[in-house]
Length: 356
Image (cartoon, rainbow, N blue to C red; front, side, top):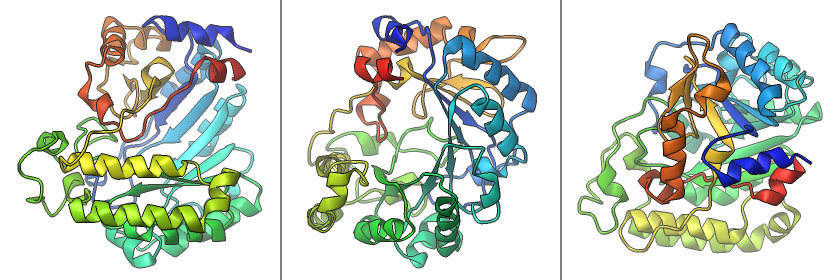
């Protein structure tokens, strides 16, 4: 047991860092409708910064590292980066769009403990409409190869207007290639901090009863939200999924319970001003940090940066700057609007922290 982890929960100063998320690159080979990071020149995280973070693992008792991006597999040294963290006894997860899985499948075993693949369609046409590339069959074949090598794979689907009706097809496609978990979350339509440079967000879409819903742009995150008629249709989809995949919910193959899927419908309803936003339970700023390509540090995907690793600044110092502690205090006191409407909360209670 690691009682030291519990100290994080009793103050706004971090004593350990259970989860470390790295943006290995800010380049991407997808062309997603919700993100424009691919329009920018690609930068890769320097190995000197990687080594600094590897050294911090022991001091901060890092238990999990998530390799992300951009597209993490576009970093030319991602297998070596993964290997260095695993040598520290860290559980390494690779978050990928899957387009390079088939090509680099031999690099997965021995380097990462788990692969998380974005699967945003149940058909090739829907996948291409959302992701901007013809990659549906390619990523399914990549998943097959990784699973054949014995590495656990989870799929992660961002539900939006273009794909919510294919929820059953997405689950069937994932099951057909032998994944270990199937997960869903709702598209974020307004957070200005999430996932690097994006199309301009419209905060009015996150105010219940706001005018302007229905006059949505053709591109960008706001164009993907469910409208009132979609919300009703999605609730019917959830009812059907609950019946067809009852055994998969019971076995844990489905990461989210049925009630969580229903809350996703409530989230979209709240965007339309029809109901209240579900209250997410989250303590991510007290148990995690995200480090971007250039060493910028933030508490999670959805909150602003509070420090930077440069000029010899240690990771322990970067996560405990006055700005960092003030941000943790603000979210804990309910003063961050982003947290009220978060689409991907993370919570680890005392029991979970002791089990690490």
